[in-house]
Length: 533
Image (cartoon, rainbow, N blue to C red):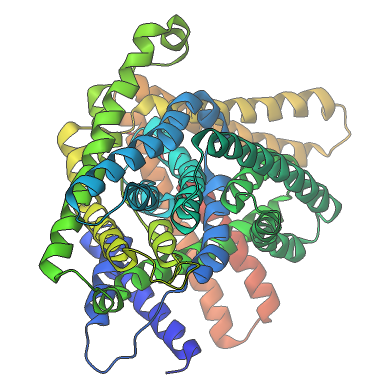
């Protein structure tokens, strides 16, 4: 089959499976990996080989950029200690423990090979974490910590991976030099990311009213940032994440509402397709990985994969619980600044360690031979173990995480939405204050002024009802929900009129599309202000 036919077929399967996953109420990456694994064993189908270059150059930059763009910058700063503790400390801890276990229990495995394997399977995946957590309604603190961790840990693990590879290829490794280079690469990557982010903001401002071009530039930025970083031999992952965080923090003052609406729509579609494609490709790799397994029986390889999977899961649990509480005992500043997390919340974080495409790409990127022409030691087993860890963590933890959240009753509390309601009300009140101060002396026709003012007063009344519902009975919120349903029903009536007009060819398509877009925007607004009951 032609590559385009393969990609198109996989995208079709991805879309269908995403629909099925929603019906089954499971995270679609899990279903995609399992389906890819099944498809890979179908006789007669051509093997689909996932190139590490495709992962690092095609999939990773936009997915990381979008994840960085979507994360809450304020929350990320607030929990930066926890994020760093996981993204750097846990990666180093897991890499070390995996190295020691592999060196002890896998015959012929050197410590350098163990560290290389540890670096490959240490980082939970940003894509897997956000995909599995989406729609679970967990406290924002949990999602921020997990998404922040998975954004940064890719960079720290890939740097460890680089030095583990150097140790095997050259038999030369000096710890203090590696440590200094680690810090140097990280600092250089962040500085370059800030510089590219500044340039990106400048460009976005210059063409702020050109919606299509602005959207296109957001798609080009992650690729350009990654390629520049790789040319300079620093961390492309860390550069892309830094650019995403920088641009996201300033996007409110740069993008027009048209650009935001279009950019969000385009990115949601692109990320969905890339996400789906990458997870189904992960599943498709197993037949090739098994066929290349030499020197070990399948049973031995499975045992080693299960062992390392268990080690990776246990390492996270061991690290997360002390990391959540010990610093509070030693630091008064931390106790004052951060709310103490419940053991239920810490349990969820400790179990959310799904691995993904970055781990597989790291294993696939291992060279086939050493500089002297000898086969790279243990490459086939490292590949198999990596796939095993991805499958075990993604399927086992991904499927059981929603159950754990339900059993421990770890859900977002009403207070997290209460601030949003208050801010909406404050914005509307400020609009009325502005109208009364600047447009009450005849500068605007009275009918126009009253129409606009009444619309905002109605919004304030709606929000007051929602806020009362958070502090008293649910009756005001129930009434408001009924009002929302009625408004959505009336929008459907208007859509029916448009549909009839289109069928009868009474209006041109441009006018119909314009009115249709107005109805879409109003429906979207109504869906965003649903009360929390």
